[in-house]
Image (cartoon, rainbow, N blue to C red; front, side):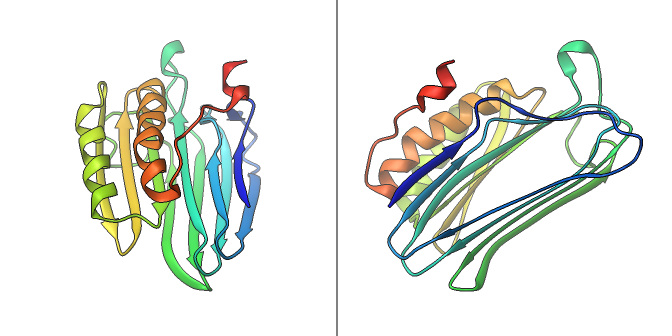
Length: 196
């Protein structure tokens, strides 16, 4: 099976009265199957208290390609994410063995973002050095964002920081166009729902 999962629009976490909203999502990908996990960006409004967990379990030679983009505050409105809390978790496993574990926990804007309000994590399993080099070329060509790529075993991880989500959305789509043929053996087509 080959599955592409996406969302019709951005996920929004609004101001709360300090109660934490939670989202838990996961997928099991059978041997030789392929999953693309491409939700549109996640936006945290100032004062949001959010906990999101994503867990992807691969079996055998299953493949995964996914990207998550998070925007903190609403920079176009001059709103920064200064109050609130976030706890974002991601796990990728193969046959029960942990391949990637990410966790971002912060009260207000996370440290280390260099004043940026948006971040991206792009991950592809079944990658090799050719995929890494192609991703690094793509990262170097990104305008308006700071991006980098690394390869851990067969897992390609690309990260990005930007002042807003738009450059990272473009970067993630370009990375997918470049990397998907190398890890899935097929060209990338844009989901129709992204055009609505």
